[in-house]
Image (cartoon, rainbow, N blue to C red; front, side):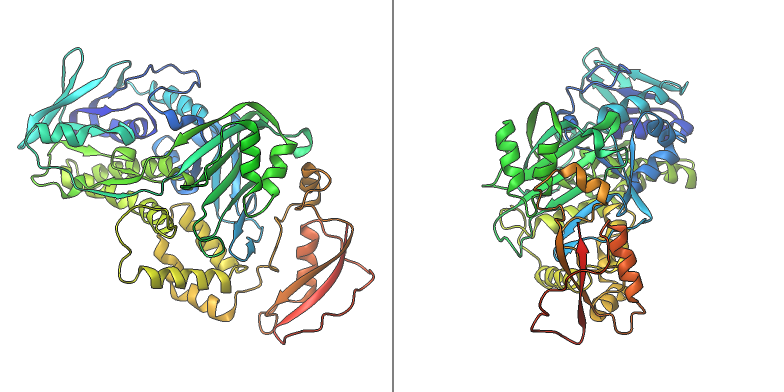
Length: 517
């Protein structure tokens, strides 16, 4: 057991590291430059905290393992459980993902609520001390090992120092000051700027209104990058974040914010902004580059020092993985201490590296596909894998198997390489499975569509809708299944005037004409 561990930073990464180390240290000290009040207010040290933060299920489960019962407390405080894809409407390359109860989820809440809940629980741990409003100015030690930290008031000895100070970490400089060589870094900068507005949801939205996300495609719109996400959070609020790459950035003026939303690949988010009530004005933030500091490769190894969270790997916030990667890293620390009484520094840092890999690989893999991204030149096979991924998405966009695997990757419970597994390739070759028809508009229920208001392009209007149903053949799908699927979307199916039959038909597709409205 450690005698004393010092954790630098009292944000998400620092608090979760304290939960991980508390059972394995006689004393844990958290050093935080801001105050450590329990009230949910934004921290000066986390300027990005005002923006949308998604805790995906891989990170949420890790956080629950570290602080049992915290998810129930957050739910009681209003945090939203957003099933993937049952309550999460996402636009893919060939239309919207099918909607059904999946195995993954997102926890929707403000960062202030999440941090205040964890802080209250952290204060209950008798061997954890928090030094608020205390700045760390350096590390103690030599290339033989790190023995503590230097603060404004003095020095703090520790057997293990954990850097959780975030993307602005000064640890690489502090280590070079002690005689270590520079820390190697990997940097991929997509040049993302994002703006977030908080809105009061319409009264008729109901408590289970879905999250909505959409982004431009590098194939459909080369050179353009625009994203938009609506996340329901506590107190009947929506957080709506818009982001863009170089040359296409959202404005923080209310009018510019709405205008940017109208440029997204589908008008639904612009319509939801019009339907909601803004609370204040949007605020912007220039996202940092994806940056990975390879402390695990530093030689000599800085014994007694590790980094986690954004201090180790900062990823594009568009994907909402920062907090979850920190939770998975903290859980990896605890696992190492449970496996060995006194794990070495290198094994701890390698565990953090493994826990961060899925978030890192997904972020740089996606960002590298956009021409405005600055980073290393694509590898020998990167172009092939990009085209393979596009083919898989185009060929099996309605497949529940593929949708589940995409949700697993997004939830950080599977690596991005899972999309190239034999099962997925087989689905792509078969043309998908019985996940439902290709959906050109978000699959809202009839009640959810009413929130959008009259005239919304995403709202079905009275008349006739043609649904193209591909590859029924040997899939075992019956027409009753398709009618049931349409009924779940609030589309009444029944006798109606049938328009002129399309001239071109194929053996692998059939056109079903159903009345709507």
